[in-house]
Length: 113
Image (cartoon, rainbow, N blue to C red):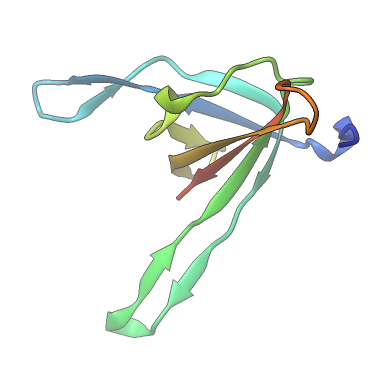
């Protein structure tokens, strides 16, 4: 794999992990937000159906390159909240992409809705 040009990493987002605890109202508590910058965030917005049968979805993909944003994303970040300044997304899957001939991580693909 070749390196990624830092000029295409134009986004900044925050991520908040869940603590696993709930508050008095039964809402899941979140840790303090961590800023991820520079990253690439490909947002999507899908609408199916019309009027009363309308379904909306925001399947989006966040690319985090440890070379530029030194963080380790693991399974504990699933169900975390990503905020891009306008919309909140929930992390569904984290896919680590490694170099072909060693175990060094090239990037993390974070799937969120």
